[in-house]
Each structure stands twice: as structure tokens, then as C-alpha cells.
Amino acid sequence: MGFFDRNREDVAAQGYDPARLPPGQYLTDRFPVLHVGDVPDYAPGEWNLRVFGEVDNDFTLSFDELISLPSVEITTDIHCVTKWSKFDTTWKGVRVRDLLERAGLRSTATHFVGHAEFGYTANLPLADVLRDDALVVWEYEGEAIEPIHGGPVRLVVPHLYFWKSPKWLRGLEVRVGDVAGFWERNGYHMYGDPFREQRFWGD
Ligand SMILES: Nc1nc2c(c(=O)[nH]1)N[C@H]1C(S)=C(S)[C@@H](COP(=O)(O)O)O[C@H]1N2
Ligand SMILES: [Mo]
Image 1: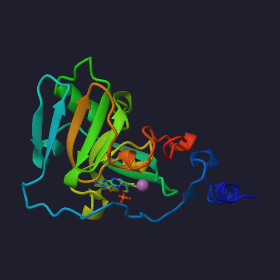
Image 2: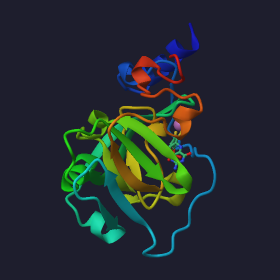
Image 3: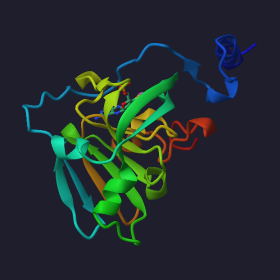
Image 4: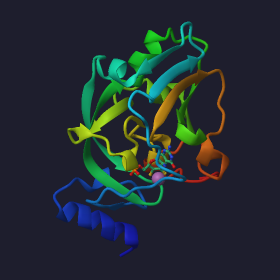
């Protein structure tokens, strides 16, 4: 039996539907920390979020403004390209769609870039952030997100590999046309569907 079949058997033995585990992944209970560079340390009131690009009215939100908007909670599986998956993670936040609509999203927009502190970016087709489960989040499992996991605020786009979910989110940009983000310039796939195992260029 191969590595992946064994991992699927482990998942089934724990009582989960093995179809939830994408090819080449293994299930973990831990919450690994994965990022390049430093963890930002914000002074109170320093963090904000800019919504800009192919919109009629760009705007900037403070943390207090963000968390006063209508929010939703999702429970979802997450999948890192380094092969760990974690099931049933719970996040609270505002739908990306709601923020983009508030900014007056133009019908000409086709793509999206999530901007994080220190210049980390991730690109996605616009449709992938207009889904119900694409969120700008500030709570994980009912608590403030720890700085190492992207607090105060990160993006969560759970149907794609987790590199598409920038930690320390600072900007939502909508665009006409695609542009490679940080990992996408460095060999990772432009789309990154874990169930089609789109890890690297050419996958
Ligand atoms: N700003 C920023 N966001 C990032 C990354 C990063 O290096 N910088 N790494 C990504 C990758 S590859 C993964 S798997 C997840 C990891 O999130 P976690 O550390 O909370 O598990 O964050 C993503 N978001
Ligand atoms: Mo990752």
C-alpha cells in the first residue's frame, strides 16, 4: 500500500470520510506554523485594511470597524502544500465578497490579490474570493488569532492550498488580469486546487 492510501486509511480509522483528504496529503491534529520572514508586532490601532483596485470607492478599515461588520463563522478543512491537512477548523470573519461589494466592485474585475505585511501576496481568480467561505478573519476556534497564525487578521480561502490565505492581511486588491503572487513567482501553481494536486508550475 502506498503512502497516500495509508494516510486515507488513517483518516477513515479516525471516523472521517477519506474523500476529505486531498491526494498526497496527511491529516494532522496539530496546527503547524508556516511562513517566511518575521511575525509583525502591531501597536494598538496600528493595523488597518485597505480595499482597493478595480472598485469605485476604495476604503480603509480599522480593526474596530472591521469587527463591527456583519460576520459569519465557518468550519472547514485546510490543506498546506507541504502536505499537512487539518480538518474542522473554525474561523469567524467578514466575507471578502461583502467588503468588495461595499467598495463598489467593478464588473471589469477578473482577479484578486491578498496583500500581507512585508510584501507577501497571493493571487486568486475573483470568483474564488466571491464564495461564501472566503473570509477576512480575526477569530480561530472562538479566540483572537495568535500572531504566529496571522493575527490580528488573516485571509482564509479554504478550498485552495493554504498559501493562498495570507496571514497579517493588510490589503484586498481587485484587478483586471492576473499577476503572480509571492509563492506563485517562486514555483507554486497559479491556482492551487488541492484536490487536483496543483502544487507547482506545470502540475
Ligand atoms: N503573510 C504570509 N501569509 C502566509 C504565509 C507567509 O509566508 N506569509 N504562508 C502561507 C502558507 S504556505 C501556509 S500553509 C499558511 C500557514 O498558516 P499557519 O501558519 O497559520 O498554519 O499561511 C500562508 N499565509
Ligand atoms: Mo503552506
